[in-house]
Image 1: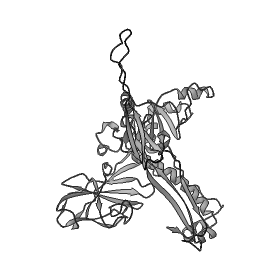
Image 2 (image 1 turned 135 degrees about the vertical axis):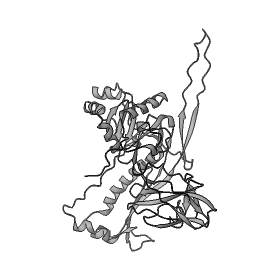
Image 3 (image 1 turned 120 degrees about the vertical axis):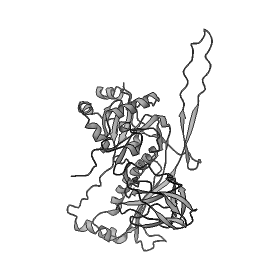
Image 4 (image 1 turned 60 degrees about the vertical axis):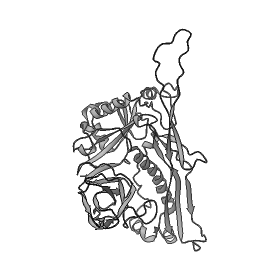
Length: 445
């Protein structure tokens, strides 16, 4: 989209102090806990991380003068795949000349924020594949959570104990790749004390963390805790875990089912289910999860439906084969994108749009749906070496302001970035999730 002067009319009529209100900054939190990796030259889009396994303990004392049997050093190689990501802004020459702001400079700041938020979003999506989940009040699944199942010390303690038994390596206050030892003589006594306490780390949504900090047991502890902070956006320490909060985490709300009807297409005659999900337009999280539909009897090869009308979301439609079958693929449709990796897939569909699913598309599984009307938050808990991500390096920036063969009259101004990004879970046993509801919806009264 080329942004013309009309896009910025409000900045002219409402500008009072020649100073723009700052865009609300989103804290970049989870990336600080990832092992940082680089793509080796000549290896294509793959990158490798190594997980060294523990050595077995000796089974018996040695006899005098007899050396013990040698141990075998073993490891597991974990391979990640890097993808290219990019962002850009394009302005007309008129908008750059007539608007009181320097649009290129403003765009540079917003694009830099977009880049770091993108890495944070991508990493949270990867961590959502973690398999070790504790549900508050010992509920058996996400769908079993009810309002009032808020983050509590009991579940926190249970998660800490589980990870401790599994041998998750503790943190001792290091941030990224910088380590300050507990006995560093340049550190204050307070810093030495905090950094010598081994702990796991948690990153949670502020709404879920707020319920924990309101618990009477936790209130007293956090009120009297040292105010030194080891990590970005750290909130406090409880039960062996240091808690940080981020407003970049995904959440999921359960919504009533969307049903389909028989239509024309290429599906084999039979029984199918569909499931709709809503992706928010800001961070592209799949956060509105509609319940599995009633069975659809397909006799003419297709399934018709209308996407929900909630603004601020685009929609995807998944399909499953069989009665009450889980949905494991995107549907095929002409209502989705026409180019790119999602060409002809039932995704990125606007609200209130008539859609006909004519076939089975790419394999993709939607998030599990909470109960209708219930919003679920996941708090991630992990030790060291639980996951890795590519370093934020090699970012290519473009800033085009001069005439070119494709734009001889210099009508456009372009600024953007491009980089490689990827992440991978190194060890599932070193991390866990706590799923809960929250008493605070984040809405103002």
